[in-house]
Image (cartoon, rainbow over all chains, first blue to last red; front, top):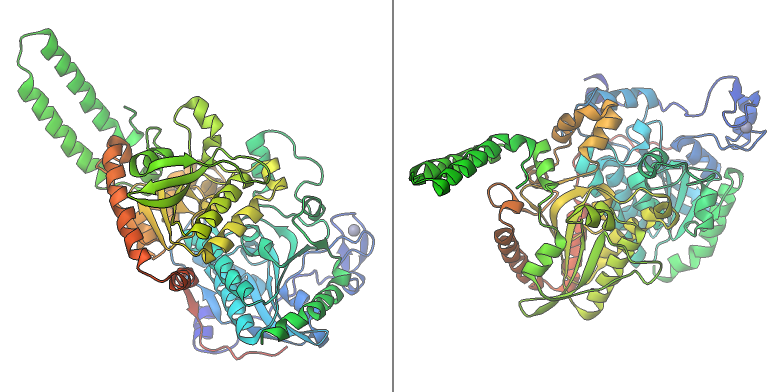
Length: 287
Length: 325
Ligand SMILES: [Zn+2]
């Protein structure tokens, strides 16, 4: 009961969000093996100062990096998953949810916030890989749907930052239907001429790629992210041969025509700021 | 006749029946009463087996090698079917078929997964696993349907979208996402029927509609029980448990409000009486289309979007004050 009961009673004592990036003094890069201080890495936009590897970070880090003055308001943060199917595998879904909430201090695998980038209003929905692999469930779908409705009501552009292993199995068909739900809602927003930017980060796979992640007016990705529909292991087992080098990376997707551009995390805020400026006339026109 | 594991008692009765019939043919003994008795037992046994199928058993039935596929229903429900090929971009996918046809006087557009009917054809159809070209062909035909005001009938029967190198190169994810985005706004009625397997993105890529029905012995979920077992149980041996846990049957899906109805199959499954199945399905499709055509098209699209908008259950906690950071 603990956590849930407390929140239900409106007592706001849930554990504070734990920053996803390593807290220790030292940062060991898993890409190039270099060791630097964590401070250096953080000040380098959470990238390895030696090889530019983009460290996996969570929603709060992105919010801090992107919003002006690190100022934003969380939206719909009171939505939490329900174990609709009473799903049990080696562990029960209830247990998995509980562990994920305790470990991350988050309510779900996506957080939505509204704030400003270069003084332009924007809603950002950002996924957290640390919460059950960033898997998409009903709450993820619902928060995106509400974010879209908020954007439609306020004529505000939307940025979704994807980072996900795909749909969450423990909500089975409910998760699957969130693909249709988010795609349908995005089609409504598109009709109103409100821009949607999709940023794919490492990794973006499965039902997330095959729904909102690929539907941006602008599709962008961080460098060297894994992006695909089927996972590389599944493909290798199906075709029974090795996968080409660089397969399913951001660079691969750019080359095959599915991304508008790749953006370094150091330039992300400015790039989105530029986009917001360029799209601003469209927002006024129909207001 | 192909019998599934759980149909063993039936198989034995059928074998006995064959033997007795042979005896009857080869001698003067009147076997009629024994034949009658056996046929009665077969009916009873079939009823017993089929009144209480597990999730996994339904999955097996949905994959029965003699089960009717999309083109069977097309030929038994519609007239003047003209198959239309290609996505006008890259190629023609054999795992998704589509075309124009006539449903009792009305022109309609059909799209659907197609599995092969024998070993050679199964390969040709890529086991019903579509590449991006399949989804894009389906979208091309649906957009044509919209231009001319033809209703769309979609038939789902896939173990999943194909996980291959070329499929990724040509944007499997984008193709599926785009289809849902466009189907949500399509200004003609869309009636979807799961006729076999409804696996994940590969299914929903042609699965968004005003009405979604499942035949009684089909399944629809985010992942196959086998893959679910391998990921969550870290072994391929828990497919039965996975099938139960996923709650993937037509009954479950209807109970959860994720589909609009269940269409009954003949006792023993669609493959035991395919013509009868086609007749039942036709009746449902026609009736549904009539209902949908009463609704002004803009309203239809809004209802369709709201139907998906509402899908899902979750908890809404007491107002957590919107905390400013
Ligand atoms: Zn490095």
